Image (cartoon, rainbow, N blue to C red; front, top):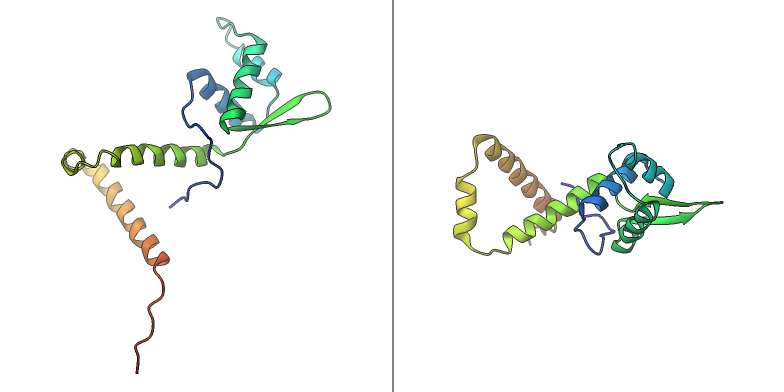
Length: 145
């Protein structure tokens, strides 16, 4: 089971343009504003100011998704989390929201609606949870003689 990443962005919610730009940075590994702007404008029907890209990159950094390093003549933006780490965080947030309902009837209704493929996935998850709990359990003390 993938643990939660050590770094967690302050705000997991992303607007459509933020998500698109973050995906481009993940694809490239690191990028300048020009790299992102050029990729976004590959679509001839799209208009987006260079400064708008800069603003979105700064917002992503403020939210904790990106870091920015100054090189010789440009700022280079890099992801603080991998795409897989972000997926773990977002799944965790959704699960916590679902569990926050705290209504057993809602959870039971959800479980009843699952199809066979989903049930096998849940069984696999339950097995992973059981294994994790066993690993976290303190060792039993030997019996007293």
